[in-house]
Length: 246
Image 1: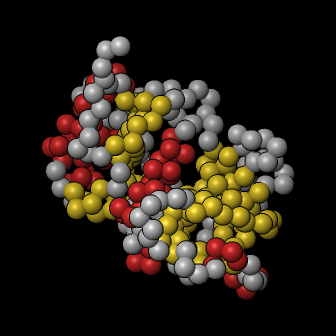
Image 2 (image 1 turned 135 degrees about the horizontal axis):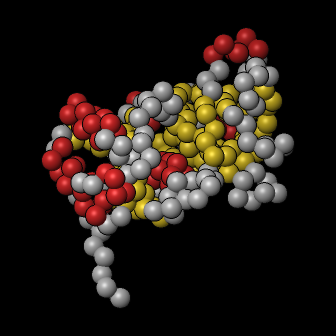
């Protein structure tokens, strides 16, 4: 694999990795994105997994923080359950936080509507990621969550194949894999490959999400790489896209 040809942006930091965070009973937030593609109504879009059998989603509000100051503002939260025809009780959800200032907050949190100042120490803040980069380019590869995965040789083959097709970044999600998988990813990062392995162990309360939360996973990966890549392919480790001549 020729790391100099395609992989130029090293990804090594584990300090800012997203993960599932509980914000209410049976409601977990994974990541947050500043979405200003519709400038008249910019929002923070939060990827959530939730049991939709209760009214908890109806009772959420957003807290927005700007910069490093401790002050924050409360804004309304709305949500959209993402459709999937398997009709699981737990689903992927978009939670939207409207942003009156029309500028991106640095952090966001979801709380119940009846929250009060006594809960301040328990607020869980998430970094708000920007969707737009200076010049998105290349092909990003989004891989569905790894489950009980141990075959590092096949993973190397997979990465080499898509590198040959011009892939410039790989995003893996780790539900359950061997220690050697993590070692492989870290070794590739040390070689300046643009590759990341993100936590994706579903909490017990929402582990019945279809196919290890695949709908949430796909949506997170697309938004996560929108600022980096011009094109994104969503595949499994046993799926190889084959180009055909026109």
